[in-house]
Amino acid sequence: MIKIYSPEIFKETDNVQCVFTEANRTTVNENGAIPGLNLGYNTSAGDDEIDKNFSDLFASLDWDQNQIALAEQVHGAHIETVNKPGTRPSTDGLVTNVTGLPIGIRVADCAAVLIADPVQKVAGAFHAGWKGAASDIIPNGIDRMVQLGAKPGSMYVFISPCISEENFEVGEEVAVRFPEKFVNRINFKKPHIDLKGFIIDQLIQKGVDTNNIECSSSCTMEDDIYYSYRRERDRAGRMLAMIKLI
Image (cartoon, rainbow, N blue to C red; front, side):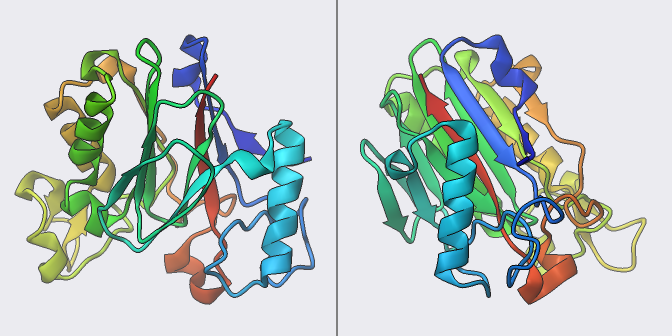
């Protein structure tokens, strides 16, 4: 049985579905090049293995695999507005107002940020590693959703499991890209970034209600139920975060 997480925040809405996959190392594809539900074509596993993982996942969800829009992520901040399935190259954020079109982001330490305005029926999926986050992919993504009619005060947000402040050691060239209040220079030899706190602050600054934000407390580097690039390097798979208007 494939284990996925359905964010609590979207259970309050009637017209949004959202899922975040776990690694599923011991229950799916146990003998694969990368064991588990690896959904990253940019990993060391072959395309046939990833194809089967996608097929198994969508069968378990009873979703149409051919209807998803995915970002071919490059750790940038480019956002595409989509109205049909397919993979968008050199893209790290997707927004849509099309009912029935899942949009997805893949991660393995970075944060997947899924946002929906269930009133105006607009959704967004954003890949927020340090580069994307520091380049304002989240506030810019909200602006793109507003262009489709969304209102920040009506938005609900899920921030996926990602690397924690305790484990997110960076060099000074990265630390200076973030406001000092999200850089811990006291408890560690090198700077550490509070990525989750930074994203939450960006959301609030754009007008999202704090009560409408669900942020996972899990750290991908510490918890083996997730893939982690920092922990596993080339043996790391990718998790998938998807959101769909219904």
